[in-house]
Amino acid sequence: MTTRSESASESGLERVTLGDLTLAYQDTGRGDPCLLLHGFPFDHTQWHAQLPDLTPATRLILPDLRGHGASDAPPPPYRLTDFADDVRALIDRLGLERVVLGGLSMGGYIALAFAQRYPERLQGLILLSTRAEADTPEIRQGRQTTIARVQEGGAEAIVDELGQRILGERETPAAITRAVHDWILGAPVDGLIGSLGAMATRTDVTPFLSRLTCPTLIMVGTEDQLTPPDAARTMASAIPGAELVEVPGTAHLLTLERPDIVNPVLASFLARCRG
Ligand code: MLT
Image (cartoon, rainbow, N blue to C red; front, side, top):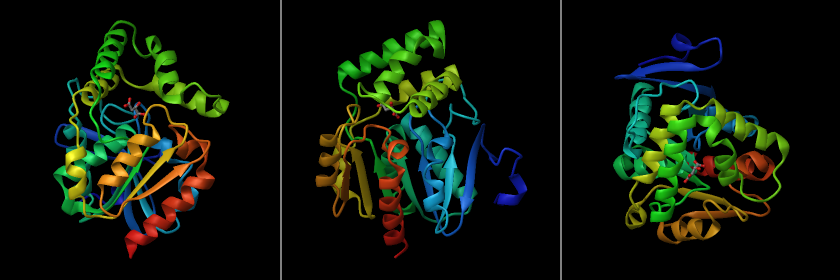
């Protein structure tokens, strides 16, 4: 088992080697563990707006997913189940029996894949700006086009188009737009291609939702065009006892837009999971 002090690096990120893959992660706070999975193509810093309100009572483990941030970017293809297995290997290595697992967007797809494979490891599930259905043929085709453009021109070739897909058409605060563009431009080409392929080939997990037994929180921005409120409502009606919170005036990146609304909801859900 890796202890926090053994592997702490100067950047505040820890590193752990799991088979062929080295993952970077931040491990901060105190209390029962909650592991949060960022969206595509971000990194663990996506969660920094949540730290001040959550770390006093929760140990937050924030990995950079494979192909993102300071983690390794192995050559594609990636499957969504590879990401879920990375999470499982990380919590095994940290010696954690059960965690609250949360994810935003692609992080939510991965959290659902994890829930399907390893339900006994979940103390709770947090699904933010995400959906259970697979890609439509049109979206899948769009991802193939994006992959071809990345192969040709790198991240610069897709920064505007992908930024707009994530942020939507509405006015977004400049700091958030800048952060999204920086994340896209900083993402390794293999990570972009691998993750787009993993999202495109994921399966519909809707039939599995009624079998979820852990406490589940679903949050969505009322103006989210990428993973709209309807998708969140579908999940909420299928998952027994799920709590659905729709955050007015926010879009896909509600955690960055309105931490003042999102964080208290997360904190009280985490308190409920602690029992
Ligand atoms: C994300 O925000 O993680 C992705 O853009 C979601 C997606 O493309 O389906």
